[in-house]
Image 1 (cartoon, helix red, strand yellow):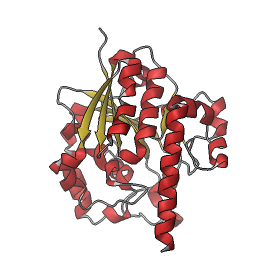
Image 2 (cartoon, helix red, strand yellow; image 1 turned 180 degrees about the vertical axis):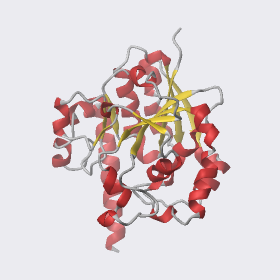
Image 3 (tube, helix red, strand yellow; image 1 turned 120 degrees about the vertical axis):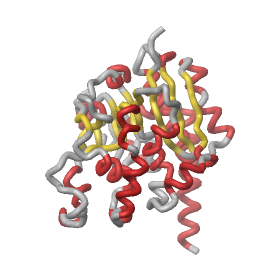
Length: 292
């Protein structure tokens, strides 16, 4: 029997369908489906949505392990003072606690954001050399702007725009080496400097903690800002970081995303349209609240 491949996702009930989709795309792209173990860091999930996600087990024989963070005092304490928004809820910080939440016998994991589509055997990523570093990632295509912000000056004193900076949507992690750094303590130091409100959520935090301690991986394993041109470049993992998403509410958004038709059928037609209705409901409720 082959060794398990451990993959971590973090999401809430508003993102159950994309979470299912990235997992299904992993399964569809490898022959090692029964070796896959998905570790799901999540906020409360409805019974209906949990049943949808468990379709990964029924269809492929992969394993799911659930970690309900609404019951975690560690998570509540850790995120209490960290910034969040409707677009970036506090569940995004769950990846910072992976080494504390996951079983200690797991030595290597892949973390994947839920706005992704996998098109290559995930074991090829899992087996990449990290060069002795605690994590591997892909350099962010918006690196200088994210680090410097307005006029490339806003974050002077925090980042140097000439440094390397990675996108945190895909992380290949050596958990024992990660634990040696004590990420929670590192975050406390960053907060103590008064930087938290100036940072770009967890991605900036990770880049500060792992500055000069990460291995650059080939861009195909996190093809950022995925749009139509990327269909010709054989991307291994597409990352839909743009406003236009393959599950977008408007036709123009759908057509401008790479592999949007493929994405829809990976999600399955049934789930795609249920997720669309879910998003339309949230969209109009938000409009009505703003109109009052």
